[in-house]
Amino acid sequence: MTIAGTLVVILAAGLLAQLIAARARIPAIVVLIAAGLLLGPFTGVVQVPGNSEEVSALIGLGVAVVLFEGAMDLRLHEVKDQRIGIRRLTLLGPPVAMVLGALAAHYVGGLEWPVAWVLGALLVVTGPTVIIPLLRQARLDKHSASLLKWEGIINDPIGVLLALMTLQYVLIVDAAIDPDLANIAQAIGVASVVVTLVGAVLTAVVLGGVAGFGIGIVFRRGWVPAHLQSPLLLVLVLVIYSISDHVVHESGLLAVTLMGIVLGNMRLADRERLLDFKEGLSVVVLSALFIIIPAQLELSQLTLIDWRIVAFVLVLMFVVRPLTIALVTIGSPIGRKDRVLLGWIAPRGIVAAATAGVFGPELADAGFEDGDVFLPTVFLVIIVTVLAHGFTIGWLARRLGLSSGEANGLLIVGASPWTESLAAALRRLKIAVLVADGSYQRLQPLRMNDVPTYFGEILSEHAELELDTSELSYVLCATENDYYNALVARSQGAERGFHRTFQIATHGESSDEAKRLPFERRASFAFDGAWDYDELNARIEQGWSIHTTKLTKDFGWQQWRVRQRDRGVEWMLVGELTAQGEFRLYSDEQRFIPDTGATVIYFAPDHSKRERAAEREASAASAPDPAAGI
Figure 1: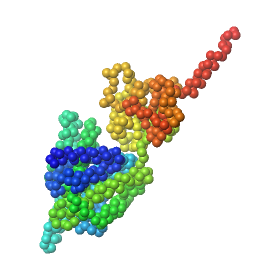
Figure 2: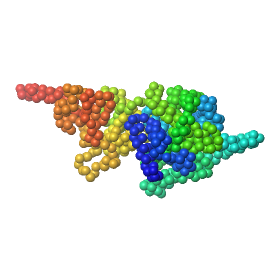
Figure 3: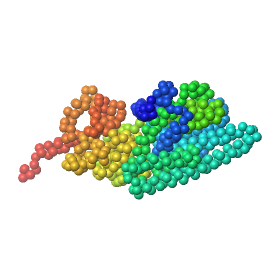
């Protein structure tokens, strides 16, 4: 197969694996590794040389892009309340985990000391490319999620540097054949480690920090056209990685990580657009890498895994990780529940796989017998930890009270009499609801009715840090300002999905088509797309409110519609609570028909009030006129 054909197969298989994992709701890395093994050692469809410097260099470039994208998403304000815990996990955690991991690799896995030390150092990494999808899946609260996210992204380059320095040391000491020169070789090895560490940190700070700050200033001042910013940033990431790696081997990942943190925390108007581009690119790159790296394995390497290696993996998960967390969090403000979660969740990802693909052959070429089992062992750790942690993180988080469970509710932006009626109806159905508004006075009636509220700007940094909306599945923007509704809806839709983010109809929607707010600048209109803020609240003043009716086999959707008479005149469909307990908000642009067992949520006149008013009018009309007897 040609290089072009191989590339097409890799990309197609990678994205197909991502789709399968998303539909099956399982960790994508598991399907990707399975696809790589199937296409590589099992069938030979994709043939990648296992000891190729060119392939290793390309893999390094891909990993740099993935790490940079993750680092850009690290916001410094997240560590305001977690700074001590994050420092413990990123400064004390790696050396402790390295020592404990090396002891387990030697005494349990049976690996010779040099290989055990390199393996222990490498397995310090905890894989942000795996952690972040798992955090979304488990719906962790923000404080617990920030600990895992920061640890995963920061410890990746640290683990690579530890493994590199350990590899340098063991290779230098091993090269000293004469026993009389052993002490000299050890001294040279220690000096090499110190020089490498200092050089890597200085190179990363200078190149990564300066590049991140510099490109941020360039973007902020508009010196680069908007359509060139994303391509330029991608190329700059690859350039900084390559230069840093050339100056100090394996320092490139630390450089691009620092570059991403610096750039991601600058006030850039196009930050979200840059992140969207990088995230999309990272998915493609990650998919390709997890096909290429397992394809480098040979069947003969897989047979090297014996019961001792399996036992080592189990000890790594059930002893090394919990003990590491217990030691480094002594006296820290990290709560007991978070410690339990951290002690279990530590899946390894792309950085461990990519680095093992380079270091394993180097150990084997240096004459270490266990060098051949290095890469298969790392892959076994990746597969087992991703499976175990991926399928248990949600359950454990819920048991510890650190997760909100499945999202099933509505975030309403804008307090008004109409949204007050809607929130009260949802509360009666036990559907989670939160109303956010910048006016304390407008929120007062909702608070008096025990409706959860948020006083403040929903797009503020405070809301992003403190407001937990993970249990809310839909967003409805319902303020009197059409353009603010559109702004919030577009912002929320990027995170939650635009199929779950709506706004009420804009004012004068049917009067002038040319003056409409275009769909590309807003969200889907909720309900029938015709009733704006003024119309909805005017109906409230006329005695309308939010009602609910449960559909049955004998009284289904069609019978209910007939009873309600003219849709759009006598009533408006708001949403439903399905028979399975799922809340859905209705929109003509996202239509559905309520099934049997569902509870219909609709806006209509209060018929009992209307009937009483009609009775009063009739009674007044039939009463004798007092003036008639005069």
